[in-house]
Length: 150
Image (cartoon, rainbow, N blue to C red; front, side):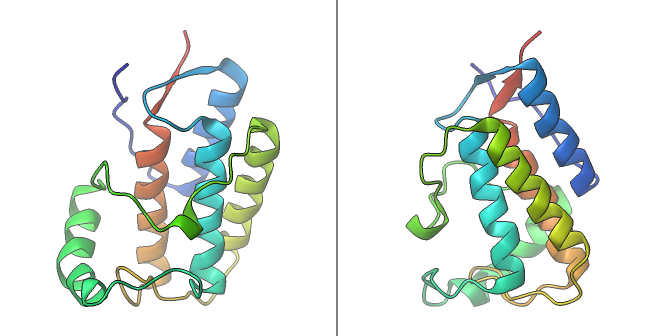
């Protein structure tokens, strides 16, 4: 199964897509189902507000990421596929799509009302607008592996 092309203009678009996947069903083009993808995305949303204290910071990657990777991602609207993140950001094996949709919606709502943001361990200090754009890119990346039925 092939991934679908997907880009979100807003975080609400990501929530709408996740709801549609839950309602209409989906096929996997990757290893994770809807629950695992939403659990991972909600974790990253929360850590962008609370901090990434438990996430290892690869030596030199933050500087490299902030001046090279961040501008490329913001310009292209894409993330590279096949890059494994740290274990502390991986889903725990959640299988309740509906429950994880609720957690994802809560994380997006919390992010939308936030006024201060934590630096990324990979991309460094980000503005609220940069975090918003990167969350849209990240959500589109992961949800693109779920192909709606019908």
